[in-house]
Image 1: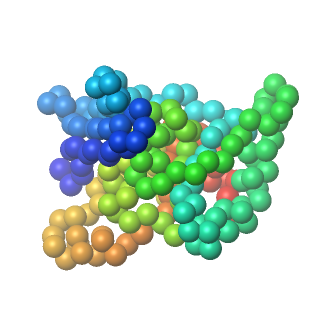
Image 2: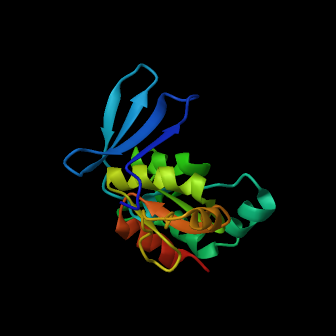
Length: 188
């Protein structure tokens, strides 16, 4: 099929411990989370908040490579700081997340979006969470606004080796409208 048919991402230190996606016999992709008490819940992304009300995360572990580029995104910071549609204080937030689990957090509704525009994710950090978010109904786009394909082109050993050296910049969101709103606010 040239795309994932199953993925698993663990987060054993929290209540939501195992994020899973698989392709059913009927050809439908489904995503689930297993909690610390062994309960399994199907994941479906929720209606995306507008950017002014969104929790957007970023992998900020390396200050010079990731935090400083984020801090230069003045339009994004301004958009997150705007009052909500009904007035009142601003509700937009930035959070810290990491790797494939950041896309799983979007799939489970813990966050609204995650962005990676500085360094990019390696395929092993992006692909499992990308598939889980896809199966939950979310959106992943590149920084040109095009949807990222689940087909990573892993058709030969040479293509696999090349994919291991590539990094992908992206926006992952609960829906295409929020992804587009984030993209429009980035200074790329």
